[in-house]
Length: 136
Image (cartoon, rainbow, N blue to C red; front, side):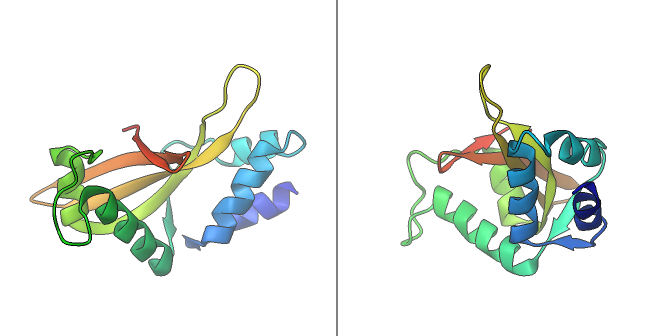
């Protein structure tokens, strides 16, 4: 099984199903150590497909504005995050975040939104319970 995990991470672009597979293996006690070992390089990030990027960007924009273009009162974004969304260049998958508790591990994907605005603007987030949590 370790071979499959390392083969996935050797790809130039990860698909949504590849990321879901990594999460399933990390949440399975039998394969957790292998996945976490393969993802142990914190400086490594992985590009995701164009379709997945479009889907993610549309979802992020919907969190900030209504379909009529009015800014939501409960928008989870600050200026830095809005700059990254407005000057969006690409998404990356940056590993797994343990959203579990003391009794259970639950790994979810970490995504980074990259934008360009006279310098590099980006932020990291995870989705937990359908809500965005900005972690970096």
